[in-house]
Image (cartoon, rainbow, N blue to C red; front, side):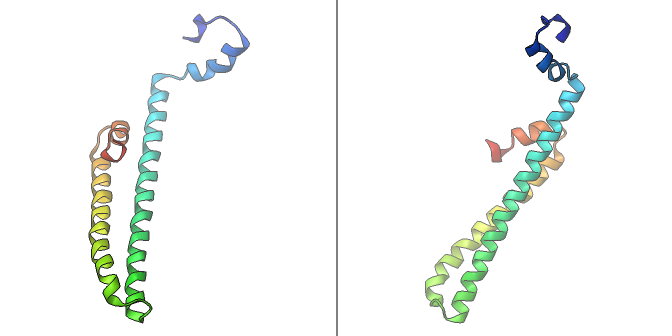
Length: 114
């Protein structure tokens, strides 16, 4: 492909990238999709950990008497389903990515990125 381009400094600069074969390009895309999957799982895992830790601190605040338990009940009751939903999203996301034959479409067309 690059042989048809006129010789110039600019063409010489981009020629190595332009001459990447389809196979190498596909490998690069797959690698990038896998990185997206790993980062998304990691970020969602951190969100779950933080939400769970927040719930723990709410419970400890109530048990220690720092805050009246009655003031925390509603908050704690609402946070548990949120944590469950996040755990479900993470589990579903991993299942979708693991079952996908094509990691690129699995990453790019996943509901988290829609």
